[in-house]
Image 1 (cartoon, rainbow, N blue to C red):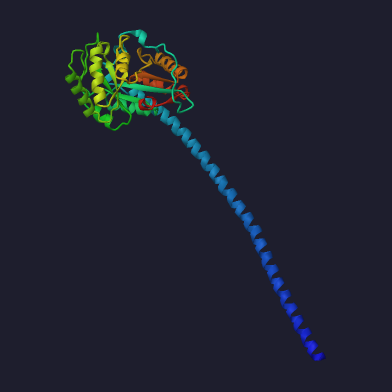
Image 2: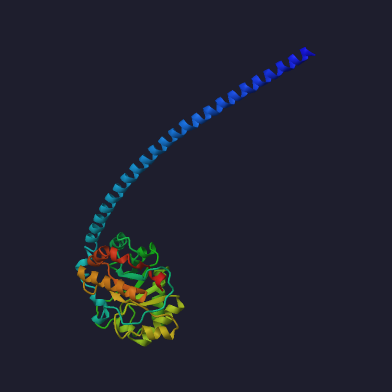
Length: 333
């Protein structure tokens, strides 16, 4: 019996020894893991710090590069604006031919309208009339401002206006209409004594040349837009061809408000004319008036032309224009 007890005690001792060794090995493994984790964490931490420093350095270098690019871009824009209309400027000396009555240059007196608010800023649309050459399009787009280009129909002197418009979205057509005292008529000019069939055919031709057009404003047109019969014929053609009229307000006698009401459509018109005089400082003052009008009434439409001083004035007014939401014509009406 004593021998059996001794053997049992010996076996228990061995088991305890094995357990002790097992626990020692587990402890050693855990210690190794903790040490590895600790040192690995430190190494990882150092690696992350290194990566962060590299990223910060890259960001600083990128910022410097962007600042340099912006400076160069600003210089390039100025250079392009100085080059625009070199050929045209000899004959294109003033935009004053558009308006018969100089009192129409500034905003009309009207009460603020209720509007559907899409942004927390007042809305301003700036239309650039008389667009017809590639150099004008390049200069306008170089400003990187959402301007609405209104293209003149093709002529022998500027045959590519419709082709240039094809590449753009949200453009308009600046349709020539008969004026009281302006003799240099463009092709496709609508006249007071044109029949309904003639006016419809002319507008249909414009729609064919500019298939994406939705909005049309008048080039000159003080005589045509002041004639109620002629405007009724025009609106009839527009309604049939799903077009909308934007009144350039070249005369105080415009019948567009009355005819719009007769056809049950909203009257849309220019509020501010930017470059009746072509001096840059004058244009900048008109831009201020357009912004003020938009802030007072919730929205506004201004019209300018693609001559150098107007485009430079717009470029120099970017900070002011940030106080309003610049939109294309289709977004404001």
